[in-house]
Image (tube, rainbow, N blue to C red; front, side, top):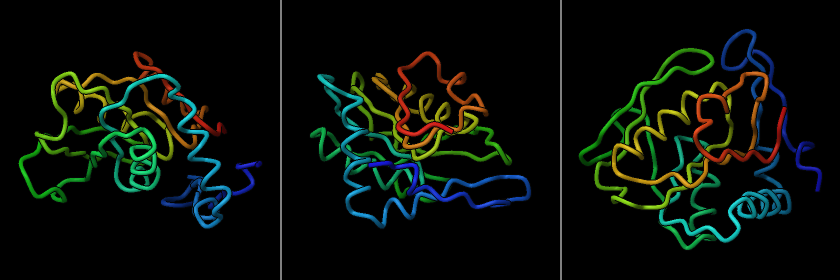
Length: 170
């Protein structure tokens, strides 16, 4: 299935000059959704994963699907003030500003094999912050994988110490 045909460009969102890659058409099509999930799982052949970490908010879509298929737990990384227990946080830059991410301090155990997942790799700030949080908790990052990579923003360079896989590249 040609998955790029299910990605819609939305100009000037969330701000002027940005072309947002909207994945909702892909999510609405059960065959496209299944094919995308299947393809993301194939990036991890013969690799044990203990936890899949997904970033708020669209990393919460495929993250739990991948966790279930990999027989792993799912760990949400959220924006400030959204997690109810003790957290650690990391500030990062993104293509249109800066933000912080938080993770429960007891969500990753020392030595856990971790898959980092998000919908889009853009400048790499979000992924880099997620990697730092996981490593601060003692997790070992096996791979960072993404539905979409915006290669012109060179985000993979910020996480080039890890295996990086992207299903669709623009």
